[in-house]
Image (spheres, helix red, strand yellow):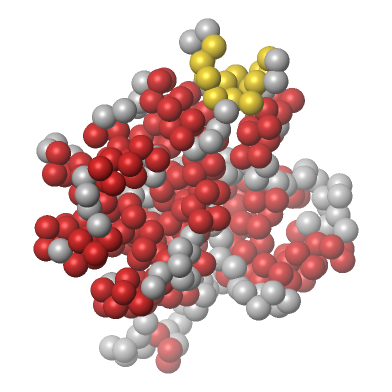
Length: 356
């Protein structure tokens, strides 16, 4: 693989070997003026993960650009480790995974195969298609609840699962996410923390803001007609007595909790499910809403929903670039705004110091 490939996929072992061959030391990377751009780019990777769920593309026309991009990856890992906040770690792992997936869409098959090899996925080509060992397939699709990912719905020959390139890349996305979540946070010593102190504090503050963003929202009167298409789809499945994938249940419960439904109202929604168990379902709801877990979970963002295969029938608002809808709660807030504007003003929303 060449330097451009290392820049596109900086998590590769070969990319790390390339940096080693360049003689770049940790001290240089943290303090030398020549690597200021790499430090800034590393911080930008972490911010992109928080705010966009994907690492934004940048020009990589020169060798200097490509080396800077490669070095930004270990920098981002140090920033995330310095913050040591699980919310940021998980979002960073997801963003790097999604970014890799989007880039693999446009790569030649031999590049996809090499990326799989360096992620320790047993993969090869056969008659012009990609295949991976069924054990790797099962390991990395275990959290994908959509029926299409079930092993019985795939083509298996002699212990290998044959997949189109996009689906193969999606499994590799999960492999990278799992690796990053298991590796981070890295142990960071005082030298690193001192060198990156100001940026780490900024990233920690940004992570707190993102995590808390939806907790204090006042969404007004609940209006099902203003639900995003994915949530309408989940409700339709529940009311039809269909089993929802775990990821869909989690998204629906956390969504309804944040728009103001009580745990009892949420519980009643699942009462018609064929596998309904009142005590088990209540336990799950109480865990997601923070009653028993101490953590009040928010729904996954749209990029995460897509990666889990539970984004259904996106409408014109979902796909409107001007609206910038990146989260089910953002969709609902926008659609529900006319109802809120007709409501009588309250003391909390009046005056120049109002939150909105």
